[in-house]
Length: 369
Image (cartoon, rainbow, N blue to C red; front, side, top):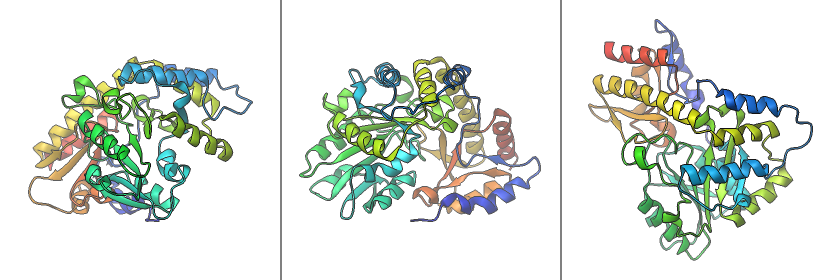
């Protein structure tokens, strides 16, 4: 297993913390805004919860997911039985290869610039992680690839896969001589900034334009952490191929991997309420505009970043190592995450998750620098 990367940021955090006015932490991307009152009330109303919750999720929750997919993602007719709540999305990412029975000799493809848990999950199962920016070519003619992870919008770089790109991966996976699961991590789907994604929405792997109406071998993973400020609730779900979801459910029943009952109730309400999502999106949009303008005026380039919760930043002059950029920013009290955490040696990831006052402070420091 690789070392846990965030521990290596500690010295830079210490430097940033010592700057007059303190640290502006834009590294981790944890939500800082209040959990919506309607969601907190649902959690409180369900607090008297003496019995075991259902692993499969309440019928109300699964129907809320189905309705959300139809309303927000253009995916209609999803079977409620093909929905499964998870304890946040990270545990599903980390354990999906194991839950699918992958092991030695099996390959898991994942994006080159990626959340490290795709790699870790493959290693936990004894499978081989393989980064790639071209899953279609890496799939073609092979029999060892058993799982393909897509991430759209991407963490860390904010890239988005269009319908044609998604369909090409699905078609290639289905043409393989061995069954291949395509799993799409779509946790930032409500945060499309650039066109066409801002207007038409970020497409899902379950979109009928991608699937042709057949969900075989496909899974979509989604989290309410970002859209609803529910990171502390560990509230997420996976949906798609009914046979695959049934397989995951069976193992999770045996393992006791269950979302608490009050959290399921809160998720049900959160998924049905679009108003708080729109309000939070507006907050992140405002912070994004401020930070992007500040970085660009200070001589940085923002690449991709078409959607999601981050800016993917590099110095305009040269290909400076990402750790050197982290050090530069720490010297003015700003903490960012090095691209080295995600397989990229040049960029740094800048989160939009700081209070407005700290975002303004970061902007002022970049202008001054």
